[in-house]
Length: 157
Image (cartoon, rainbow, N blue to C red; front, top):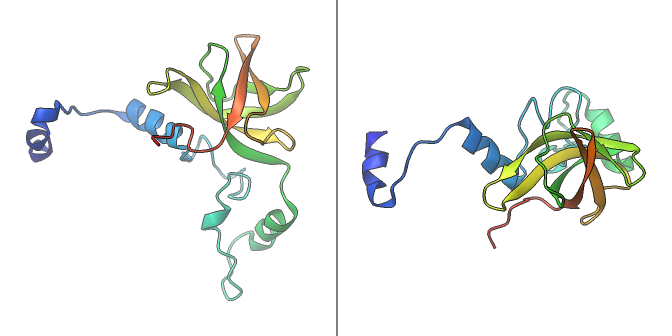
């Protein structure tokens, strides 16, 4: 611990807590168990199909269901979004379309210190997944405009 801080003294490094970890993982689009994924979601819905290997000689819980989801698609997907209107999205906030119809729920949200705007991830209904799709997050009974973005939300390149 001390060696790390001694080595970083010229860079004025400091310890950070879970708030920084949460912001950084959200900017990268990394899922957090209990927020973005849990026992009610599937890796296919969460965009984690790349870690779900369907080997013929390997069996695992819900393999048939997950294979069906991969082949036939799902009704909701976990997607990143960036707030257009000023506001900070939070977990469990409702996501609606331009007509106020519920199309999803925020799983994680915060103010991005790098982007200086609200960002988040939400499970969105089919038809609202494409980048630049306009969505609205209900924050304090107001529908604030956001847009769907590809992950990672913050891209250093």
